[in-house]
Image (cartoon, rainbow, N blue to C red):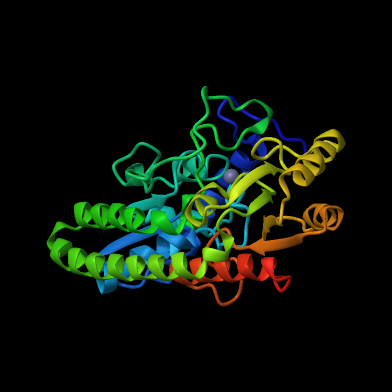
Length: 321
Ligand SMILES: [Zn+2]
């Protein structure tokens, strides 16, 4: 079906489909089928934020994630079941920085819940306080640029976990002040767990120090900063923009010049291009997870960090798939 893109970047067909689901979905799905009984209903755009909200919120909150974690985070397919969840949400946790720009704001608009619309009191971006990387000199969405406000893939950076958790604790406490002490106690314990994990990852990740990589989508900046990996280039010339043959040729040349050891892609991307490039350069293509839920067994944010390190180290020794 032909789609047109509005000035905000949303597809007209997507909006019409969402509207046609709206009434039906809210009539059919009862509230108790969406949220377990709790004092606060939390919807997260991605499972990473849902996992953190569960760790900090405990039994006072009921949390659901819209994305499963297997998708491209910029292009999560909208489903009718999203609308009643958003309709009953007290707060909506998002990565922000326009990571969910193509799919979440139109859903939040159509969910008949002014609290969680973009810029509403319950729409919570979780990046505040994170040292943002790759901030462009000017905002430009031409050619489908998906990172117009800076790199939004901070969820895969181990160094970002404590800040994300603090932002979620703050949002839960503001929405449910009578549980603020409980959230603070859970938040403290959870941040200690993250800090201990971070130290463990730093020690185990030492072999990655100084290695140069090529990424598929520009989503590796925070992970690479943590492990002191250098990025020679990206298969996508700009976030969300498919490569031309000339770009791939140039990238291969760059890869040779920099002695690239790993080509890194994620579960939502086609492995063909990274594997071909890795063969040409005589190095490994490594598939990481870009979110909790991306692979079976990655059920928490701490799992995600351990999994990605295992994949990266496996790539150095030729064992990662
Ligand atoms: Zn991206």
